[in-house]
Length: 44
Image (cartoon, rainbow, N blue to C red; front, side, top):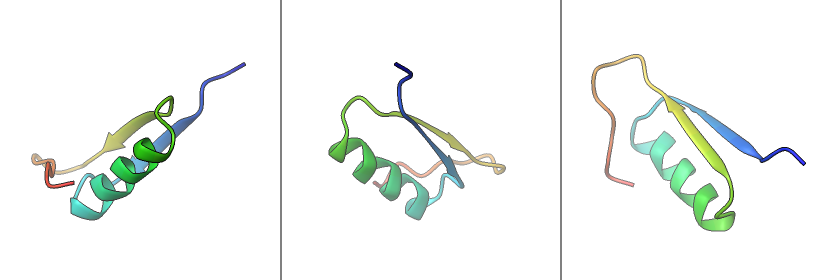
């Protein structure tokens, strides 16, 4: 069975908050985030 994945487009505060919440709900979830800018938010 394939592992579930979440792709987040935009690694700003909102994107990282959504990724963190999804990971809290499903510890086995693979999360990948894409950001076009040079900075990623670590505030989540």
